[in-house]
Length: 387
Figure 1 (cartoon, rainbow, N blue to C red):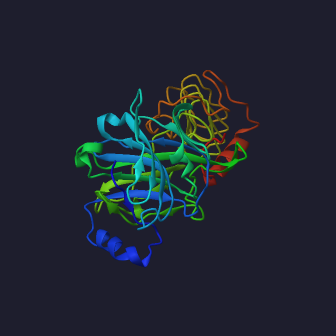
Figure 2: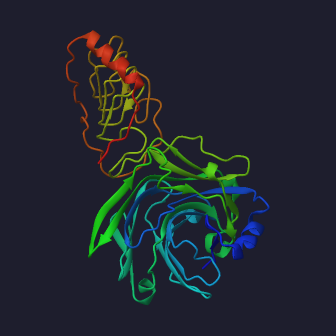
Figure 3: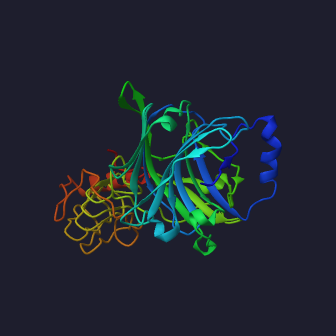
């Protein structure tokens, strides 16, 4: 296992010189890391993620006791690390403990599909007696015994996207794959209380909560990248970690849709969902785009009370001043609608609240009322469905 020397936000004087020497020369590649300054002791953490692809690249979620890298400190860490090599179909679960010579317990797991092609729900359960890893509700590993019992301190929650120099572990780095991105739709944290997990908080990443999260601006030995705060962004209800060349930081692309599980559906309304009070937005398959000015209904959707609106295949457009029925609708395209949707995830269930194919819109009282509602929607921000 690679020795990971992370330098945290608070560095003791004894290690300051080492930290500065490791970051004095800028590295040619930039990654991203987001972490909670507040620690958590035990609990269940669920995260909905779509990982990066490319040899030499790692997309991760992990827990980490701050200061573990310090001389004389006892290391405590629990990992989910997805390899970008081999089409991102394998990932590693791991516990790292110990002082001086550290104990690791890696296990590799292979998915049936590429973990870079869609969102999946990764779960860590950490109790005083066991640590368990699951993906999409299926437990793949449970660890017990002395190593688990030695995890006695609070740990921060962390995401990072980076490139390891240990080619025997992650494969040779291929920078032609850059830029790469890791997408996080949501995270839930459940506290552990007398044998039960209780939901303490969740973050749907509609914005970056600076009271909960901080961006890393450091590196560590064996890491091909510096962590750059500009490579941690939030867009369309999604946390995006980026891996780029120096001088090309940030994310400017389209966020892939998450058609899968609650509490959200990423950017826009998904299959069976409803995208409401939107300006220039389209309903996804089976969804409904309502009270929208210049809106297009997707396949099977219904665009209602809209000014300049088009009904998609199987949908009905009503009270529209210049609406044309036809495939994809005649209105302005949006996520999941005609001609402007983001790449869909091959996820599972719908987002609820949707109107099925061949559904019809509700009648409006008058054209004037519909236009007024539609214009008022211009000031509204499109939000994801909530579970």
